[in-house]
Length: 213
Image (cartoon, rainbow, N blue to C red; front, top):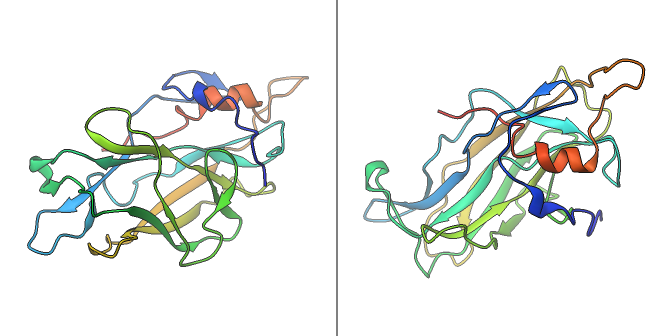
C-alpha cells in the first residue's frame, strides 16, 4: 500500500522555511538506542522517552496520501559507541533492535519510508534496518508517522512503543509515548494553501518538529 511514492526521500534535509503558514525549525531530535550500564543490560534511550510538546503533522495536498497529516520525525539511531555521560553502552552484535507497538490512538498509523504500513496491531514489531549516517551508529532510520484524513487539528494523537531485542538476549526498554498534532489548514488568499504538496512535504518534514531538551 502506498508503495514507491516516496521517490524523493533523499530530499529529507534539515531546513527552516515557512510552508502553508506553519513555522518550521531544524533540530536534531533522533532517539539514540543503546544498552543500559548494568549487570543485566536492557535496551534504553538517550533522549527523553516522552515529549513536552506534540510533533507537528503536515497535511498533504497530493499523491496517494492526499489529505493525510504526516511527519518523519523523530528518527532513530542505534549506538555503535558508548555514551558514558548517559550511562549507556553501545549495542553489540547479539542485539537486533525492533520497535514494538504497545498502543496507537484511533486514526494514527505508522509507515516505513517507502509508504508501506507497519505495526498494524498491538504487539507487532519491526526491526530497524537503516544505513548508519556516521561511525557512531550501527543504523539510522526514519519512519513515517501519520494521521488519517479528517483528523481533528484541535486534538492530539499518541502512540506508545518500546524497543525489544528480536534475538532475546537483552531486556526490553521502558515503554515510551510520542504525541502528534495535525496542523490546521491555513488560508493563503484566493488560491488557498491549506495543504502542502509532495515537494513541500519533502522539504518540510525535517523541519516540522519541536526542539527537544
